[in-house]
Image: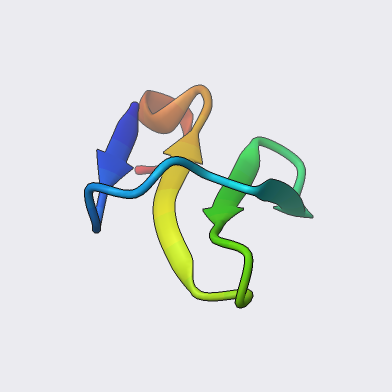
Length: 42
């Protein structure tokens, strides 16, 4: 599942933990969050 927070092209992405990645802009602000296997989280 991907949640876009801002309509900006990501500059980079950061793996926060297994299955969770955040996209950031050139200034390091979060622009989106990707969560894999979200059904396993609940």
